[in-house]
Image (tube, rainbow, N blue to C red; front, side, top):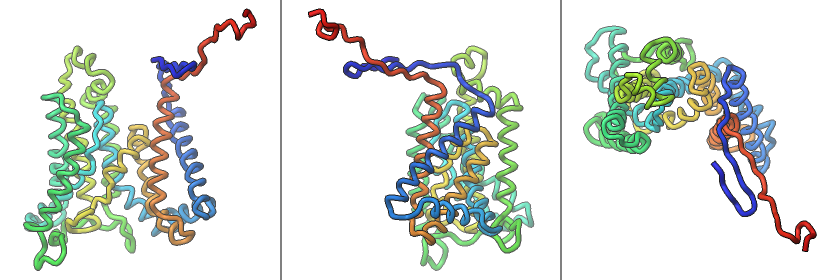
Length: 371
């Protein structure tokens, strides 16, 4: 592709894709470094010392066992939602719907935890987990079906379904599901034996962390060690080639977005059964949106997504300590997240394309003294 800007010409050409473990690590690492450098200038403009701010951020995220476990608690829904988006993105589908799918997963898990409390013992946890995955999976299947059947953009659909989920749950909490006597817009607590047990006494680290780590292995084997994952990735690389090879492209699309929604729904279930124990507005804390950054920074690989989710969890936990210690607003972490995404995308551009900028030759007589 060539662009002309006055006497300048810009040429953008695709080059052979650079792959490998080293390239996969260096790119995100460079993006993080650049993001923190730019954020340092913003911190300095606010009158604080950037190094001191980062020191307190690091201490707040990893300085003690309690802070480290809080980082893992925050990383858990990010990891599950990021894994779901990895499945969708690897199939060539741009899903923005993890937030809505997470909310619907939380809704279904809450309903199961309240109305199926008669199920004894740990079996109820499995039922609640399954309900959460079904809720998120159904919410993901809608844009998948519309994409496969009618060719409707999954980007628009997933965005709109986010808002439908948010306002639907808000309505349900206001009227039919509100806990008696109805002072607050929240449901009653789910059955006590549906709560996820804590892994470390004295902390909030619950079983959902182990479920999330196990899910990373599941996604790895699904995408790289199973025929189904091979088909999904083949569809993501080239739909026409996959179709001519006899693969059912539409079926893989629906399945990929359903699985993506199921993992996001599992994230919603983990937040309900592990932390809040009831459904309430804003329980998702916008983890579904941050999960897109997690998936991109993790280079759409379960291992990378796991590390990226811990990093983003650390940002959330460490930001509070930074704000208390040096009065730098905790919202700065969202600036850092945005910068990370920007630099990750720039890394993709620079590694996959050759950009040449040159000036057109000037052949005027005056320039050569031929007048």
